[in-house]
Image (cartoon, rainbow, N blue to C red):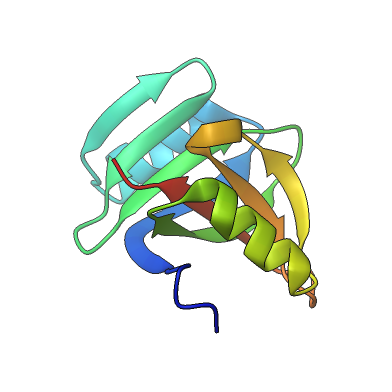
Length: 111
């Protein structure tokens, strides 16, 4: 492993759903998770041991774990060289990548 690139789990997970109002009701009212963040495109809940981000997407998507990295560009280059595919590049802020098996992960720059 390249010792200049370090990935650390950050206790955040994201899912995709087509209906944020329904998600707000289910996760907030049914499960009782405190709503910490709301925008027209996303919700953020405190789930105790992790943060759950619910993103508005046309179809339901799987749970996506998130990693913090000190250097987004180095991490991007590193995973691509190892066979990963970038599926959503957010520039300096981070990116989503699919590993060689098709599983998707989120990478966020440490602030």
